[in-house]
Image 1: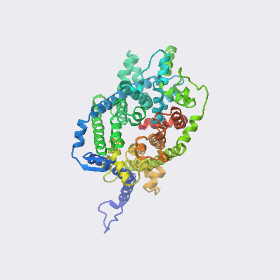
Image 2: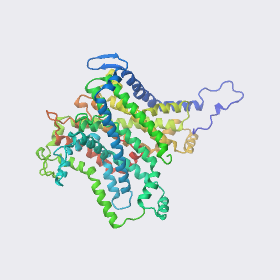
Image 3: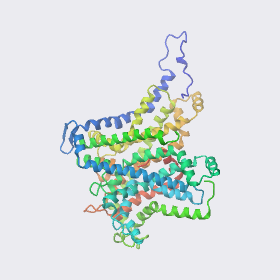
Image 4: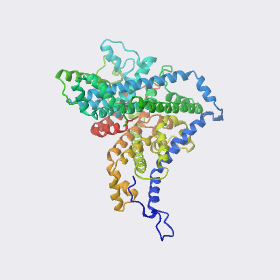
Length: 314
Length: 280
């Protein structure tokens, strides 16, 4: 790996040399390595690892920033978490969001990738259209959809025109969750679409040709050839999408503020409310521990699962 | 795929694509056109695709109700510094982890990779406390320091490392014979070859900073210091109701320049983001 020729100074058994120089070429090179990584390593310690440790420490304290109270309470915050009447609904909303988002996002991305993997005129233009929301900021995208989903907004206007009486999307429990999921799917599905498209174009055409000769139809070839061949990409996309689904703060904040009731109050939003609106830093830290635990558990599960359904490693 | 489709299949395909692209295209159209509509027409029925009368007052209000130009500048300059800083930090670290052998490299790499497992929401409480004790709350420092040095730049480092690993050894051996030191090899040999990776890191870092929402609303309280996403949500009347046409005008001013840059540099955007697979 190292590009330097073997450092002469370190060749053992060189006679007639009472003292070797300490600054050998290898040591100078190591020093360069340490200097190059220093900002990133120090930054990770100061802004990631230490704060992560502090989150655990704070979660053992009753800490109200406004009142200026800070004292050790042991596991009281965790007891509160278990007894908090909001906990079940927050966890339910979070799970629903993640599951709904991953399923819909991956399914639509696959469909779009299949449709756009055809050689017809104008296909590049459509690819551009489907991808474009990715570069629009989440808040701007959410504001526009919030506008469209008002009771008398554009979506219901279109539905009315074709004879359907649309619901007040963001003010009812069931439709508000589905609305936020769909808004996020439309925002980011272009990303997974491009990933899948690249993976599909990497499948050797001979496989399809051979299967076709054996009489396999398009449907069979998709499930027996395309899907197994792009399974590593599907795993990657699902990991990224699940991680992102746990961080849907801006969408919830702009569209529903967690409502109606607690229907769309996901964990990151509840954490923000407790810490920065109600000034319960200790309890907020406890929710952060829960969030970290969920991310860690999901990552481990996905890592285990990859052997089961991914055909080969990238 | 290579097999050409029948004419009927083509018609079905185009039809399907046109229907499917509605939720992707319609919002942008609706955002821009509604921002020119008089407030009374904005929820008019039947919904009209174009304003009956074009009106610019919403755009005037964007700038009179808030220091919007200042906020625009804040977002731009923060995103620019974060991007340059992240590229510098991640290119150096990625290069070292890929090409230099030193003791403890594997352990230190794991220390950094831990950042990928920690969502930024999970550490916001201690980070807020840290910046509060440094008297840096209501300044732009937290929005710059954390992304450049903390978890968000880890993915950038990972991407740069993957790219540098693939460079052939011979290049650096030749550079070494020419008397270049480590920094010279990095600066004159490796970096010029890594344009695709640099483009990818640049684009996703810029978008990520541009999109940041939780951090600004946690750290900033003075309207003069707000960033764009935060400012967009502040156009509300005295009852807390959204001033839709002003919000839509401000959103248009935020989104349209980005869309234009995207159309111009679409190849870099799509490849770059597909490389990294993430955005806000």
